[in-house]
Image (cartoon, rainbow, N blue to C red; front, side, top):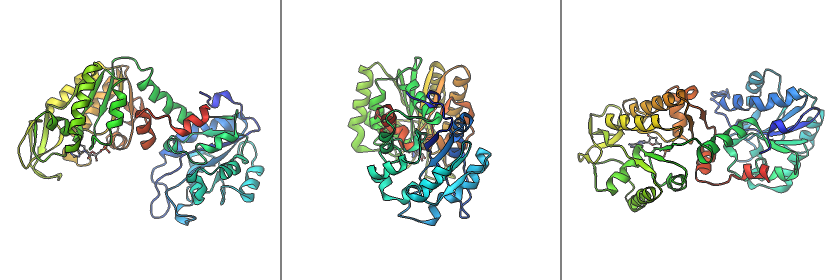
Length: 395
Ligand code: AMP
């Protein structure tokens, strides 16, 4: 795996794909700079070596050139985060971009205009990738959030740098963290899969059964497993057409010696509302008209005990409808258990969509080993897919 440390960037122009797809408010202020902060170590390494940085990113999903998606809006924030004045060019390829790149001096940073102003970016167009490649001497991919896309700037451009290409430090950390769970993790290895739907996690479950010793199935997903085994789940969410699959997963798990933990009780609500009446019930005896919305106290204790036994922990998906305060307790307690296990020396990786939101909302970010920055990219990695943006650097 080629990383930044394999290169000395002195007098070199690093063409860096970053993920600056940050949220903006109605006045175009950046409301969450996490992604910019995450790219800082890579940029600083290049500058400290005596090189310069040409940053390229997408922002949103523009249809052609649309001012509200211009990366000019984030120049001030990027400058603030890096502590230097960042230059901006209103094109990402062509004469203007080439002139701006040529003018760049060691220690300077240039931000290109939104790559997705050009349809060739998402089309993975080779000529366009070649025009991007002209701008720099070394290609660095530090955008995990788009590593699952074979776009011009994330994948195709790497062909123009047969030797001079590497992962940035953020992307390298993402790869190492996933490898720690999927390949090199200390046993026992635990995966916790929650969230709403079995169908969106099925490929992950099937892939992960070969890697883990324990599997917790929580959240709304658990009810398909409970019903498939003959339980009464009231109005809880369920994918009836996935019940056979659920039984098959349980069979496969047994054959592979994976211990599966399904909640034993739930907080049942009489409406999908924060103010609903609630009661604690066994997971397989939910009264008609009631639905399971959070892990019950016995399940929380059960999951805590499993978490504390494990040395490597992957968490994807909440244990309940955590967006509603009344149903967030199971997810919060699981976060606390993972934080405690991490303090005791376990490696914990949180990733993919809503679990990252939950971790941030409840302040666990600094209490787990690593929080992934890529939603779809993380899920595809867990499915066992080699991401095109990663393969392009390794080729
Ligand atoms: P996912 O994107 O598949 O990880 O699903 C995340 C969503 O699952 C969150 O919006 C949660 O509110 C939802 N969720 C978790 N548990 C339940 C449940 N018991 N009933 C309904 N939705 C749930």
